[in-house]
Length: 283
Ligand code: AMP
Ligand code: ZN
Ligand code: FE
Ligand code: FE
Image (cartoon, rainbow, N blue to C red):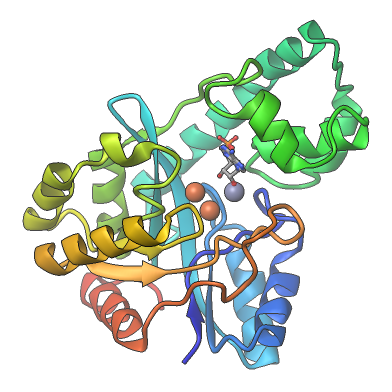
């Protein structure tokens, strides 16, 4: 079984519509794919329908913007009931925060001699309800300021670069609770990627695991080198956390994240599904 549990569509900051992501999953020989757009469930019905038509099982997912002690933490939620009011309200708050920080980043871009007309950004955002820095990056590419998303982030948009503006994200423990409350299973995405290791030390993961707040960690991710994967896998085994592996596919928006480049085992998927079923979530 080839199982990839972390992908993005144009409903957030991927470049292909949900149905196309699922079609590409079939091309990549995947049996199961989860669509996990940032802070929105809007692409899931389309993805599930495309999966039925295309012979790929689609797991309903989301990637939630959380934070712990001021540092960004991404959570993958599986099987959440989109209608859960408390979760829906919180996601709406996060999306408002995404939109509200845009003018400040546009002002920063103008200050650095890279004005981005609102119409250019609007075209890149399209009808996504979840605007993010990758949309700004694509506008910068369109205007010839940078060659690609990677250069846009490395030079301008990353958290320690001059254009970056902080945005609202849900407190980690609140987000963990909301996913479980909505019937879902919750996995920390790329926990030790991009220097985030200090923010999520083994003691914190141990506490979240022991208290039943967390189901798993994404071990196999392109932001983790082989040693990091080995250490995180050992820790997950010790703590009884599920270990997943996924691509974090963004279509043409991210190179080196091809569908199926990392995979999750059938056993782990079965356990995720069992927990969602036990919590009354949506499979
Ligand atoms: P935002 O959601 O606006 O905070 O933008 C963060 C998103 O940009 C992440 O979810 C990734 O999809 C993407 N991204 C790509 N490269 C980077 C990078 N070097 N640093 C941070 N985010 C990146
Ligand atoms: Zn993304
Ligand atoms: Fe992420
Ligand atoms: Fe992601």
